[in-house]
Image (tube, rainbow over all chains, first blue to last red; front, side, top):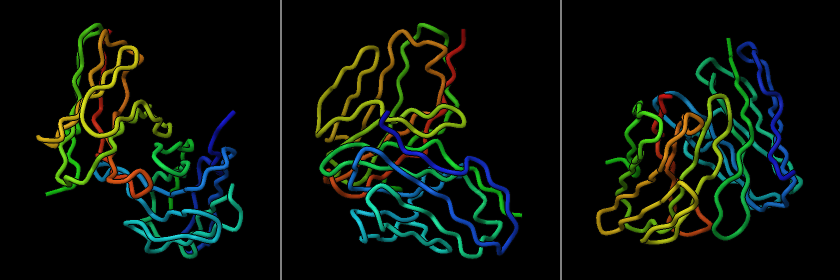
Length: 112
Length: 111
């Protein structure tokens, strides 16, 4: 089944404790992206990647890091999480040319 | 002016009614238009996409684009309780660049 898999689905952590949210896709897609979704603010892009070793900032990159060492994986790293990073996070991937994103099921992160 | 504007709702309609969901946008370069459906506690899923102006139909769903008015619509015929979800519009200028999302409209179909 074609899908984007994120882990974990739920995470509660403390301020300052580094964490990684994993994302993997099995569709051989070129593009991958991370979004956060907050009430009243909608989906905001954090980082995106157009291919292996090619990443760029989205609208809200502060406090986040990404890497794209393999085509299928695009982990999101929070080096020192803060409470304002409490949010619902989505990883998504799409093919070259015009196509909509396929989204993962989301990771609900709470930073206390 | 925001690039993409979408009424957040909630919009409540009785089962069987025709639903109209809309977005306006300001960037005349947008050519690719998408509608996503998001159920509670799930990721958005692509419902339909269109290129440039015109209509596209898929079962009970019709997507309409009016580039002259910078206005897009999604119509749902014979609405069902299972259509209750948040609907997000999205658009981009070229097929391979950044996709801009609306904030979504919450839709409730009342049995």
